[in-house]
Length: 200
Image 1 (spheres, rainbow, N blue to C red):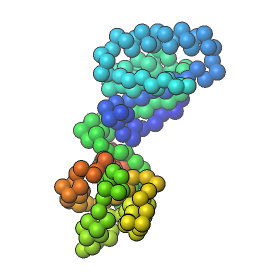
Image 2: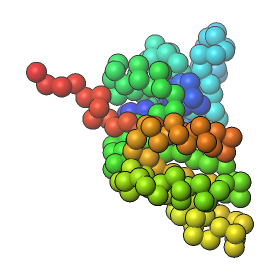
Image 3: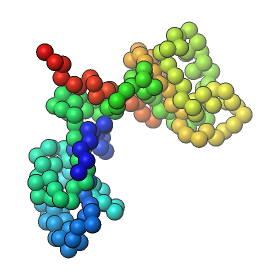
Image 4: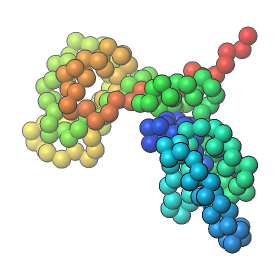
């Protein structure tokens, strides 16, 4: 069984996840246990969990007690468990649903990542003018954004959505004010180190 720290809320609302698989064990026992598990899940409030089933069963929970229940009764079938690093991390995830927890910031220095919609709707001149007088250490263009700024007007296809990395919250606010209708999402990076308890 692998234990992993949750990096972001699953489906934007669940901090806990368990992955179950029969792992070569008795198939009849697997199906019998999964039937009991599904019956138990139906007894929970619908908004407290989510199930995703492919070749493995993935369970997402809002509450740790439900994850623990699965572990207690089905531990031999659980291959992965995801939960917040600690209480402080849990509280931060629940209060900041756009955050991603990483070992380092984006490119080791940028806390914010803005993903824009189709590059054809963006003004390359706006980005060039906005950053002309700013310290280059405050921002970084993703590969697709760099290509858009280099060849705008020559090509209409970019291999992925343009991405912009920013170090300062003020720059995020200004980008949102100017480009709100063209922003797909804004993600904030936090590091696991930020949640470690400081030794006295």
